[in-house]
Amino acid sequence: MAKLGFKRCISDAGVYYFVRGNDIIIAIVYVDDAIFMGSNSSLLHSKKKEFMKIWECRDLGEPREFLRMQITRDRKRRTLSLDQSDYLEKIIKRFGMENANPTRTPLPAGYKPTANKGEANSTIRSQFQSSSNFCNTGQILLRSISTKRNTSFDT
Image 1 (spheres, rainbow, N blue to C red):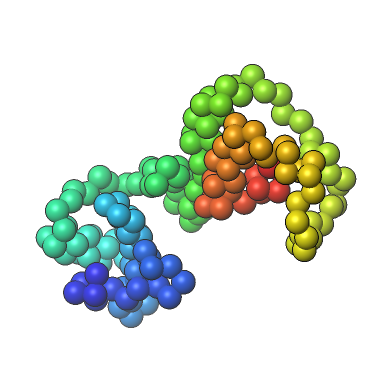
Image 2: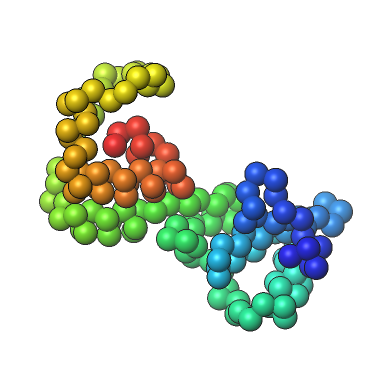
């Protein structure tokens, strides 16, 4: 990416940026997937062409999905949204929970979580001895880390 004039983002090794004047191109690269976005479409296409000359790949057009995240773009409002609802649905089906009923969490409204400074008590530990429960929770929490942070609180 450095050959193309991109610099690596300090906070994420898979994110690169290219700046020319007031224009910026951002490239996110993960293993064999890449996505480009930018403020100047002609500069964006130029950088993508340069990238495709170096690495064997093809342009799939406007991105709709990236790393199991759905991408919704609203040009009129100038917004870009990411969600993983399709992937969460697959997880729900995988664990046979399609007919599960939503419920409120047992936590009171306005509850503010605090860091746990001790070890889990035996009741909590025994609940997680079941690998099914552990896998269900783990799969959902993994999604919360990447796009849906509010699911981690409920899980």
